[in-house]
Length: 202
View 1 (cartoon, one colour):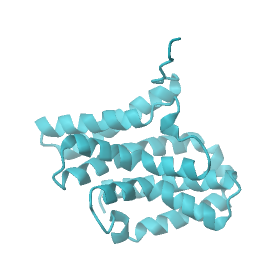
View 2 (spheres, rainbow, N blue to C red):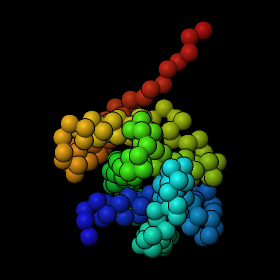
View 3 (cartoon, rainbow, N blue to C red):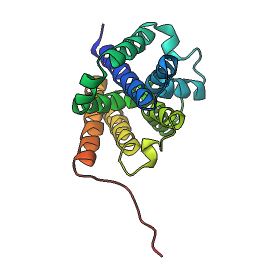
View 4 (cartoon, one colour):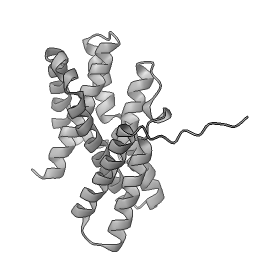
C-alpha cells in the first residue's frame, strides 16, 4: 500500500468527518449526516470524473472509501466533543487533504489528454467542491465564496506541480512540494488573516 493511497484515505476520512460534524450541528439525522459526510469526502472527485468523462467514477472501484466514510460517521457520533477539541489537528489534515486531492485530480485529468489549464481547474474542483456541496446542502455560504484563501491555494499548488513536472522528472517530489505549497499558503492565510477581498469604490 503506497503512501499516496494512505494519504488519500486519510483525506477522505477527515473530509467525511468535517461533513458529519457540520450535519450534526445543523440537526440532521443519522442518514442525513451520512449523506453529507459522503458528499463532502467524495463530491469533488465525483464531479471531476463526470466532467472529464471517467465513469464509473473512481471511488466505485474501491469499497475502502465507503468503509472510511462509515468509520468517520460512527466516530463523529461517538466522540464528537473530543473531535471538536481537535479542530486544529483536523485543520492540518484538511489542508494536507486539499493539497493531495488537487494533485490527484490534476493527474487524473492530464491522463485523459486534456489541456493542463483544464487539468488545473479540475484539480481545484476535486479539492474544494465537496465542501461547496456540503455548505450548500447545510444552508451555509461556501467557504470558497468567503474571504478565506482556499481555492486559490489549490490553484497555486497545482500550478507548481505542472511547472515542476515540466522541467524535472521527479513526480513524487513534485507532488510533495506542491502539497507543501498548498499547506503553506492556506496556513499563512488563516494565521495572518490574508484574503483576496477587494472592496468596491464608490
